[in-house]
Image (cartoon, rainbow, N blue to C red):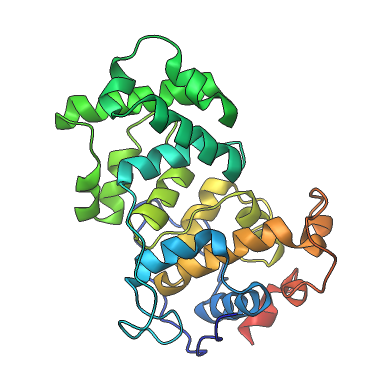
Amino acid sequence: MPRKPKRKAPASPAARDTSPEPYPSHASPSPAQCLAVRDALLAFHGFPEEFAPFRLLRLGGRSPEDGSGGSGSPPPPSPTVLDGLVTTLLSQNTTEVFSRRAFDSLKAAFPTWDQVVDEEGTRLEDAIRCGGLAATKAARIRAMLRGVRERRGKICLEYLRELSVDEVKRELSQFKGIGPKTVACVLMFYLQKDDFPVDTHVLRITKAMGWIPGTASREKAYIHLNNKIPDSLKFDLNCLIVTHGKLCQTCTKRMGGEKSKVPSVACPLASYYCVGEKLQQ
């Protein structure tokens, strides 16, 4: 269990999204709210092992507790941006287990990305079939790879590491099937940039806490939450909310979801639901 971080409220982030703020009169979440929820979830779950390698990449080997250099584990090898993007595409509408299996199968069948583009049969579909929606995902992956090669002369996305968040969004949003959530995941996990993806768990939980209006769409929630949540908290908070949404039986029952994988326990967010103003005190 990691030590609880010092409760020093971070400064408010500067709005970077070029889209207009959809809820200008909606004050939540404040930096203090974000910090309180991060601390509550971290104390309850610890940091999720699923996301720990990406956290080490962001920290560059520093200790998560005190931020000092050299006291943590060495960061793992960084996946290529392209591998990250394809992994994220394959994760759509399936589980982590099946998407990882599909990616490993794809890499085994095609040693190079050029072979994926040039192959005219159904080997790509066959390779990723275990991840579901094979025909749709294969078409999107091949079209994206072809577009990168036509525009850049080679199939490589490492140049994105040198671009700003907004520039990365403009580059990746040109490709069919790569929406805001996919781009945000690439930014946060594979480019180590500050962004806050909104999946089903994040949308439900932030609505329940009053951080976004109950009628908010995923797209508007993404803009609002990225404008409000401090950059320094986005990664940890996102990973913890996603994990909590998957595991907490209290939350799944409250929100009409499927039965949880863990025994019923007191939810650390129970006092925050439907009383968003409480966190402002």
